[in-house]
Image 1 (cartoon, helix red, strand yellow):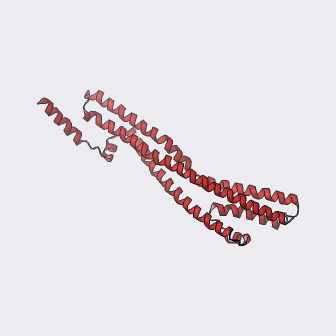
Image 2: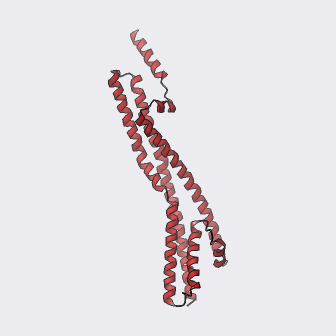
Length: 242
C-alpha cells in the first residue's frame, strides 16, 4: 500500500512538470539558458547565410550565362563594354570591365607601339583580372568561415550545456537525498535539450558549408576559365597590331 502511494505521488510530480521546449528553457539554470540562446541565435544566423548564399549563387550563375551569351555572340566587345562599364552586375562582368578599362587606357595613351609595351600591357591586364577575380571571390566567400565554425563548435557548446545540466541533477540529488525521477528528470532533460540544439545548429551548417563550398569553387573555376579565354583574345589582338 505504501509503495502504491509513493508511486502515485512520484507519477503525479513528474506529470506536473512541463517538459515542453519552452518549459525546459524556463526551468533551466542560467548557464544552460545562455547556451540555449546562443545555439538558437547561431542556428538562425546559419540559415540566414545559407539562404542568402544559395539565392546569390543562383542569380550569379544566371547572370554569368547571360553575359557569356552576349560575349560570344560575335558582337563588338567595345559596344558591350560601353553598355555595362558603369555598373557591372556580376563578378564575370567585373572581370571583363576591368580588363577592357585597362586596355582602353593604354590604347588612349599610345602604349601599344612597341613589343615591350604590348607585353607590359598584357601582364597588367592579367594582373587586373586576377585582382578583380580575387576581390569578387572574397566577397562571395564571406561568412563561409562562420558556417565552418558553427559546424565544428556547436556540438561542443551543446555538450557543455549537457555536462552542466547533469551536474545540476547530481547537485539536486545530493541536496534532497532523493534519487527519484522527479528530482533527476529536469536536469537530464535540460542536458539533452542543449545537446539536441547543438546538433540542430551544427548539422545544417556542416552540410551547407560542404555544398556551398563546392558551388563556389565551381563558380570560381568558371571565372578563371573566362579570364583565361579573354586574356587569350586580347593577346591575339595585340599580336595583330604588330
